[in-house]
Length: 336
Image (cartoon, rainbow, N blue to C red; front, side, top):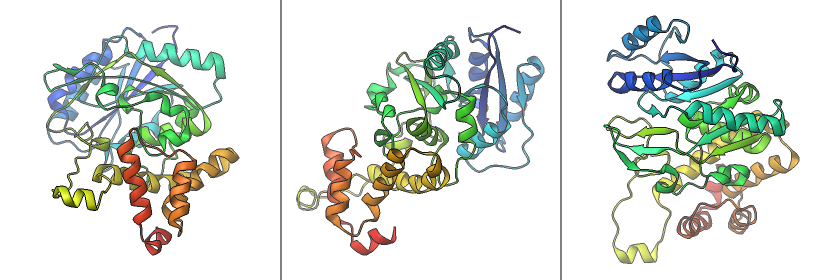
């Protein structure tokens, strides 16, 4: 098909018939010529499978639909099954409801080439990009998803920066073979594949950042993961409190607390799975991160949080988190 290396797009679907054709059309319209798609449906009942089969007939050499023996139960597990089935040297991840800009793959592959020329192919490598935030009709709501969500992509260069806040959006990612080989060991405790992969490259590999948006990131009423007004697209609302209660008992917003708990759970699993492969520095950093939650001493919890820079972006969430760590009951901390 082309002298260029093949890039495999892993497409996870579930009841996505409403927008799937637009996404597939945008993938096959890429200006990078050597692309194939590996798709897996997770038990749709809305015609998604029929659309996939129609496109597989149109593009028999470029689209393969995996046989699904049963529902995996989540986008994370669906993508994991696709990752395990992939044999490509370069892999991208696709949601079912976005639209890729025509140079999405070529831009990320160019950045991947630059990483490989500097670091070789033996390290796990990942490239990710900004996105345009759009509504269900593809009208642009915000030109930069990073700006809208206050995401600082350079945080991926330091493990402490991504432990508590994800900066990578999976539908923009390209990874190399080495990263995929590590990522297929993702544990059940992982929240989502792209956050787990960002930990892998932050701790053991290298990353490339494309600041130009390459995806129309569609937000609609059936998003499984989206902006949602909160962390990881999970809408969490706190009970309303009076101004006096807010002054007398400041507390961390539920979304940040949820993010903290998810990251602690994931960190324990990550350390168990990859601890022996980490540098002494990064292994110690993960242990320190867990100590913020498990130490019986509130002074140790706060001091560890500050010393290792486990910071959110912004003053308010960091102050709220330190108050939370201070107020944790010693017994509950030790048992976490």
